[in-house]
Amino acid sequence: MAIWVTSDFHFNHKNVINMGRKFDTIEQHNNYIVDQFNSVVGKDDLVYVLGDVGFTPLKDVKTWVSRLNGRKVLILGNHDKGRIGEYRSMGFIEVLTHPFYYSDQIILSHLPLRECLNNPYCINVHGHLHFNYLELPNFFNCNIDMNNYKPVNIKVYEELARKYCKENNKEKRFETFGQEWYYNYYHIKKQK
Image 1 (tube, one colour):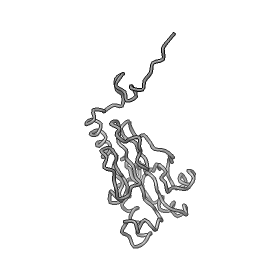
Image 2: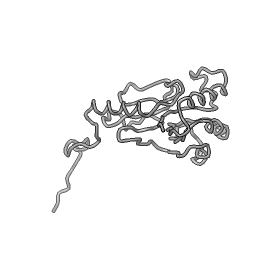
Image 3: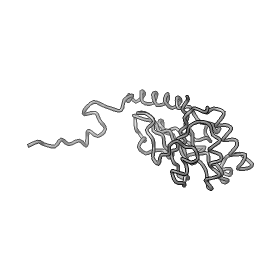
Image 4: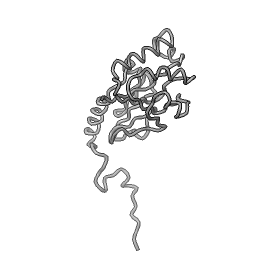
């Protein structure tokens, strides 16, 4: 079983074709995404979808999602307007309304997280930015527009996280007492 990460399918979103995706019709767009997805994801694989699945009506989006291989976890994006139950009925095994700590060093989210800005402990794998990226060493856009419409194996991000945290000497999240980021704000309550 492999684990994958991807985002921003935008099934049935006709305007996304005018924003840089080179397709003649939305059906061509949707079919290509399904084909690319299924070319790497197996039936037993796990996929984290970091938001913006598709546009209403959701029953039409369900048709496309049901054709995608694997077990899928959704982190809702800014365009995901349905109820959690509606996304579960599409075949998502879990639907999250918030970012997800995949590991000590990897946070998955739809939008880039301010929490990771200048954070030596972790990387942020996110979507939302389509053909763009942040010029920051620990932010990685997994949007299908950046990856030939295919999900990315989580091992890629695990290696990037190991490298980033090692370079910053922060392979573990815990520092010794007195070295923590909050130490300058730390006040000991005087005992009577």
